[in-house]
Length: 131
Image (cartoon, rainbow, N blue to C red; front, side, top):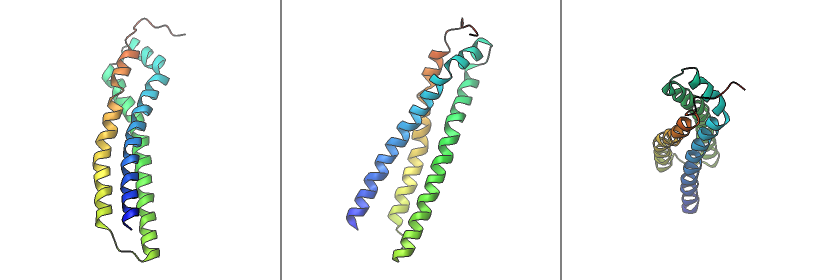
């Protein structure tokens, strides 16, 4: 059981870093995929902070829904597995899950915020054409 606990802790930590990196990559890819649109919106007079808020929302909302669904499925699966084998509720696992969630949310938003300079860079050219 100790080995399962250590593997579980290592897996949670690794998943945390992969999820944070994924959020940053998703945000950067979103900016790069839409750089022409962002440039044209800036050329049309749209404020950069409005574009930035839209970028954060379009990246964060799917990630939050995915993370929430994954969390719910994991908790439900663990509950069913514990019920099947007759195991008791483990408070250390619940604390670990709460810590990962509490640290993961700010890490995700920090990673998404890391693409803000990229948004500024791709919208700096104000002489784009509509081609």
